[in-house]
Image (cartoon, rainbow, N blue to C red; front, top):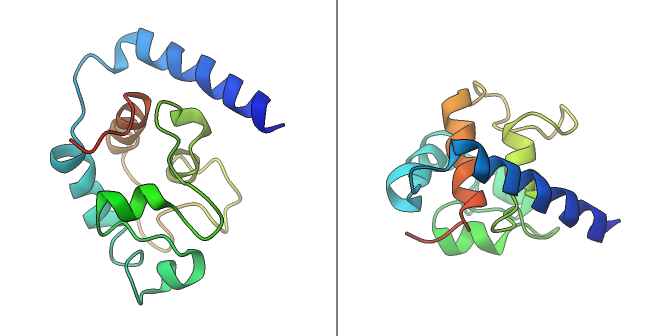
Length: 124
C-alpha cells in the first residue's frame, strides 16, 4: 500500500511540476515559513495544543521535517503524498484538517506549500 501511495504521489508530483506550477523556486524561509508562522505556529510549537496532540512543531525547519509522533508530514518531492499537503487541502477527515478552528488557507498559500514540497522541501 505504501509503495503504491508513493508511486501515485510521484506521478502526481511530476504532473504538478510539469504543469508550470513550479516555474518559480519556492523558498522555505521567505515563502513557506511565514505561512506556517501565521497559521500553524500558534498551536504547533512546544507546549501548545497541536504539539501536545501530535508532536508536530513548525517552530523551525528541522522541527517540521522531523514530523509528528506518528511519522513525517512532509515527503520531499511528493506533495500529493505529504500529510501536510493533505491536511491543508482539507482532504483528510474533517476532524484533523488544518488549520483547526481557524480560517482555511487560501488556495495560493496551499499551492505555494505544495510547490515547495514538490521542489524537494529544501531549507532555503
